[in-house]
Image (cartoon, rainbow, N blue to C red):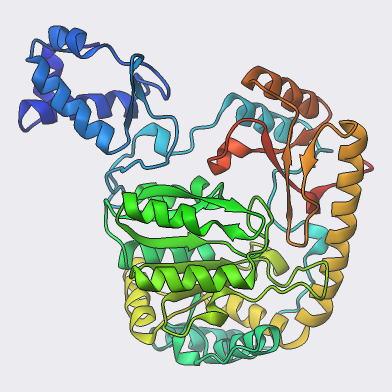
Length: 466
């Protein structure tokens, strides 16, 4: 494996050849996550190079987070994304395999269960259940009219004007927010919005902060763009300001990405006091905020404040991302971005070069939902999800006899649970027992968390299947 002639296939100085060789071994799966490397002295001997050259290469890979040095223990392949800088892979560079969310043994078994069993309780599925998706009628529009819309798509690259108007009205009714429709960009969902932001407002090597744990951690697009992820500690009111301040002292954070209302996976709602404090600090440090608001209309208590951070933004430092996927299903991929006009126009141009704009039909369906259905449907959806959440908590308490801990959800989709385990083996035993009953969950490690945490999406809980 470690042979000097292996270095000849790479170009550049000797230390860079060693870097490329280690990256190549990771890409090919020859070196796996968590594996311990040979010592510096042994590597130098195997590769027939000076030890100082090996040290220089390993230092660079450690700085990028690809390797982890442990005092008195050795050097290991990093098994997490926190702090890792990958080379940008948007231009078809093949990323190292641990950036691709390589499936764990548990994930592989869960996939088998999904394929083999028809009646399963898939609590790892974070999408809206089919039974809760509203039945929207196609708009009364002819094929010729649709063709004309598509023909004029260059003029509609920011989105259908009538849909943007409906979104502005929706935001006014929900949050008493006055939006300029010229600051709204229609997207095909939050994922596209995030992709455009990483390509238009960030560059490889930039550092961003996210909640820890967070669903952002599981998204490959940040690593594909060569960004470094850093976690911000949270409590029941959102990110902890002292943790954010400490992170900014240690790293040059460009943006923070937050999911403050019914956060995925923890389910907390950031308090208004915390929102204002985070805004003020980020403004003092010239840090932008990207806010993903996927669940704010799904509060179980009408008195709960679910205002977005954008509501308190007086200086256009927040890019707000809205979406309908948690209300009308992921197949109608419609979302929106609220940002200064110059930003959304530039991001729209990037999208135009990539996929030539948006399809009109999903926009018309979204417009129909906002015009005629969202009030009654969202109220019904809140009631259904609350019933499911209560059933799930009742089952958990009986199944584990009070040995699990969790905060009852205030709304949204997810319940975050601490299992009674101390080791990975104990956790796997519980997960396998649940799998044997057809119950699939999401592990906390999927979100950058530690051992013993699981996320349960109660929309898919069916007590008749347990």
